[in-house]
Amino acid sequence: MSPELVSVMGGTGIAASAPPPPLPPDRLLELYRVMLLTRLLDDRAMKLQRQGRIGFYVPAMGQEASHIGTAAALAPEDWVFPSYRDPGIALLRGVPVVELLHQCYGNAADHTRGRQMPVHYSLKKIRFVSISSPIGTQIIQAVGAAMAMRLRKEPLVAMTWFGDGSTSSNDFHTGMNFAGVYSAPCIFVCENNGWAISVPLEGQTASATMAAKAEAYGMPGVRVDGNDVLAVYAATKQAVERARAGHGPTLIETVTFRMGGHSSSDDASRYRDPAVCEVWKTRDPVDRFKAWLEGKKLLSAKQEQAIRDRCETELKEAIDAAEKVGPPAVSTMFDDVYAARTPQLEEQWSELKDALQRGVVAKGHHGEFPL
Image (tube, rainbow, N blue to C red):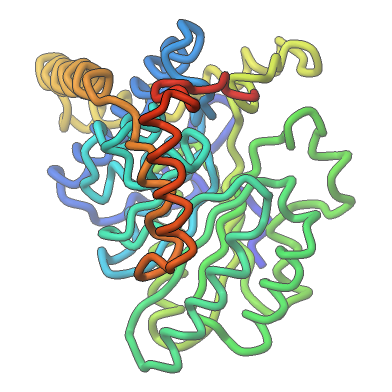
């Protein structure tokens, strides 16, 4: 286990302890672009929710380096099992931001046909397994997938992300133990942002660190500066190579901070000291990476503005497009239940169609979002 906080870029109160990974300039700039796009998406989506244009949102502000840096160490064929605060994984894998917004609006272009809560993306084409609200459920799913890949002799790995609160779930202990015993090619990423909604870390565990928990399950534990995208990438790359070579799982603790509320339904000022938030603002992962790139002469002010303008335009066009798409057709509630509709479903659809035609059921009625 590595209890020290590994950092590449350093920062306020954090000393650099590792060299930067050998990434080419275009890859570094792509990581910055995705981090910035994720930040801007958060800002716009929270405003959309406050304006009543979408029903709910979970911001990732402050955690961009944590989930994007870990995902960057994977191959495109590897499977990902994210939590609900990891939109940058999809963006890094090439998903247009409009697809994420279709899901947030729950419109007819949404892959899940409006059946999931906003930000609960499911993207089969990039092996991004559906996000679910109950904490920790993705952990055992990732381990199961990793074992399946090993049995099929596929040279792939699975990676799963979860918060510090999820380490108190049964799924965390079950998944970690199973992976350790059977040497599953799975990487566990605990995004330790200090809070499980309003429960602080000290109310969550008596362990000195989250990385320390790896020892009990017979796997390496690494503790990394979660706001340093280069440190996160380097630590994860090593874990991925280890798993792919057949040497089993790793637990990575990314020490980060949730700069916003738990969700659009949460007011973090009711339980969190504002002074702590100010300290973490000096470690902002997007600003730190920008400063590092500028210091290495890899990013000029003109380049940064061009990247920002591109992201802003992409977001504006995506929102405009998503708002032009209507809700899913009522008939879609009978799709995807079985491979083919059963006689019972056909009968129910026939009855509903008749009710719609007679005006017994309002065609355009949509209830208020419950949160």
